[in-house]
Image (cartoon, rainbow, N blue to C red; front, side, top):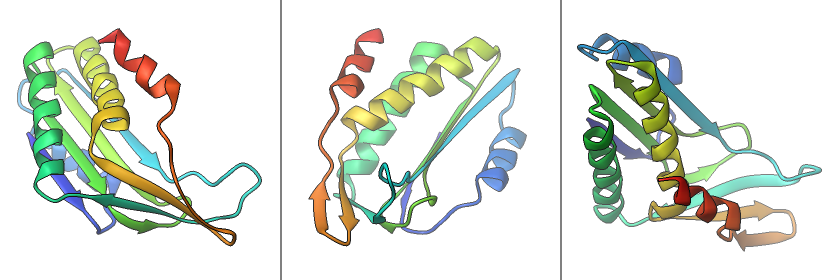
Length: 147
C-alpha cells in the first residue's frame, strides 16, 4: 500500500506501470486519474487545494486499509496533489490490484467515493472575479450510501 500527498506533478502512466509490476498475485489492476476540470464556460485560473499534513495521510491510509480488508486486494496506490493546479492538471490517482477484476473495480470506486467526500482536502476555485471555496455536493454524499 502506498499513499502519497504531494505538490509535484506525477506521470500516471509510469505510476501505473510501476504499480502493476509490483502487484503480486493480481489478476486485475484498475486505475483512475482525476484532472482539474474548468468551469462551465471556462474561466478557472486554478484550483487551490489545501490540507493538513499528517492528518490527510492518516485518513487516506485508513481508507486504503479498509478497502484492502474489504476486498482482499493485492495492493493499493493513492496519490493526491495539493497547491495551485491549472485546469487539465492531474489532481489525483487511485490504483487497485486484486486477484479478480470485480474486486479491483469495486475497491477503486469505493476509494474514489471516500476521497471525494471524506478526505480532508479543501478546494478553492480561483477566477478573474476572485476565489470561492468549493462546497460539498449532495451527490457525493449520496454515493457513500452504496458502501
